[in-house]
Structure formats: structure tokens, C-alpha cells
Amino acid sequence: MRAVVQRVSHAQVEVVDGNHSHLSGEIQQGLMVLLGVGNGDTDGDARYIADKIAHLRVFTDAEDKMNLSVLDVNGAVLLVSQFTLYGDARNGRRPSYTQAARPEMATHGYELVAKLLRGHGLTVATGEFQTHMQVTLCNDGPVTLLLDSAKQF
Image (tube, rainbow, N blue to C red; front, side, top):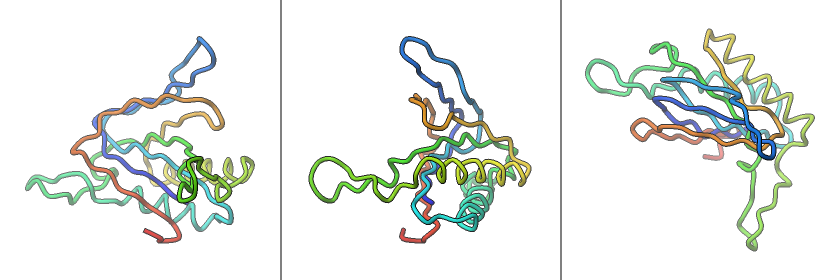
């Protein structure tokens, strides 16, 4: 699994269907997480990513050091599925998505990460799987980290 994690002062995701849209998820202070599920990802990968997200020390303490997690600051998580994190653009100009999990497997991984984050006591807002979404956020810092359960980066 891969995740792009951003520390945010607020974030929201809207689902867009033609000329209509509706707010799917919204948070104030916390983490905006784009999550991609890859071929072969297991429940262990979901546990690794969820635990890492919950305990990343990216919020500042009283001494202005990044020593606090989203749990420590009573923040929330906005989790949005993002299969394009597995896009491979090394050859040609059109990315290949062959390393992204099929929708049925990706749905399971995405929903499991949300469940595990909630199990840590976090408030988790979400986008809607396999829909066109528009994400709006205010990256605080900016702080952005890349996570990969295979530890490729």
C-alpha cells in the first residue's frame, strides 16, 4: 500500500456526478491521506499503513518540534482512495496502472485501513470509492510524507 500523508488545518472531499456534487467527508486539523492499494497487498500491509498514519509525529509540540501524532492533538483523518499512486510513468507518456489492485481488492484494503484508524480512536472521514472526487485542503507547514508498506521509499 502507498499513502501520501499531508498535515492539514482543514480538508474536504466532494463527490462530483455530472452537474451535481455532495460533500462526502470533511475534517479540521489532522491528516489528509491519499491511499493506493497495490496488487498483492494484504491485511498486514493495511495494519502497517494504519499504524504508521496514526503514530506519525508530524504535529508540533510546545517547543515547536514535530513530536506529536494526530492522536496526540485529537486530530482527524480524511482518507481518500487513490489508485493512481501506483501509476508507472517511466515509459511513454501514458501511465500504466497494472500494479494497482483490482477494485474488489482495493475496496477491501481501503475499508480496512479506515476501520483500523477508527480502532486507534481516530475520527475518519472518507471519500467514496470509485467516484470522481474533488479534494480541497490547506496543507499546514507544508508537511507531506510518502509511505509504502513495501518500504520502497
